[in-house]
Length: 241
Image 1: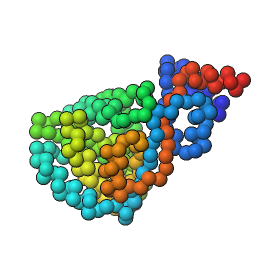
Image 2: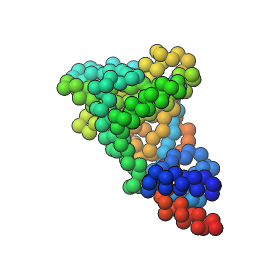
Image 3: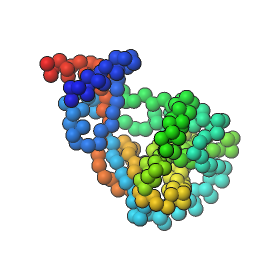
Image 4: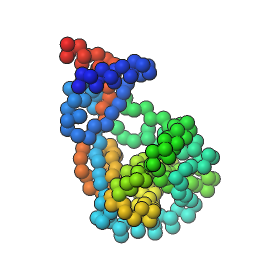
């Protein structure tokens, strides 16, 4: 434990960082983080949707209903984003990540950039991974909602539902349901061997929990977001002699 926290402190000093953040979803690592004196930011819940147990009728109903309810919106699928969409995508991702409810202030200051997206896409290609993206655009071609699914192309049996977000003016209209239903069907069509989808979210995110419940996701474990500061690290090291 001391060796690890010394390494973390060294990296923070090397790069001039005041904070470091981590997500732990097992009891042992959670115990270690608490022993270090790390600040608990938010509780996380991890869910799994077994494809055979999915609420197919609900999902199909969403796909039949929401496109009809929003004829002014356009749904598009991408793996690699066209250059013209990289900045709007990064801006929308930043907005929606920052809008996620949190239990304690001072959490990770989310900021997605064009450079981040381009770099991460290159890394995904190098490592045999891909991100599926469904995006919604309004009549002015403005990106208003997104959902992202991470897939290991060497083992697509378990895919990872990442961020789903809707810009402020378009929330509470069912767009997240439309996006997640479309992604569920797209994944099955492209990867027939897929068996489940795993996702994680803050426990305070009740709207997304309701969507997941309706789709058939099951809660499998709890975790926490933690924050370490240089002062916390120094205090722990002093206490350990």
